[in-house]
Image 1 (cartoon, rainbow, N blue to C red):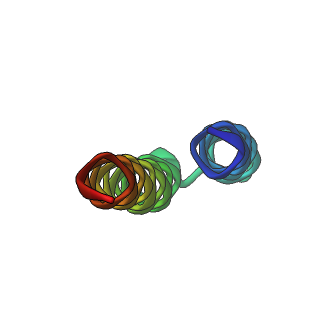
Image 2 (image 1 turned 180 degrees about the vertical axis):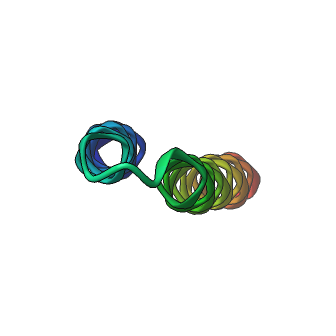
Length: 59
């Protein structure tokens, strides 16, 4: 969950920075990339936890 929150925070900061510099498209693209990466990492971590729980249940 931390990785998703950190990615969201960095995405908002990047969007705000580039928006204030007069280049909103770059900020939005970087923010979207950071949010997608954070979401991907969060989803992967959830999958790992589910697999670990299944392995523990089979023991």
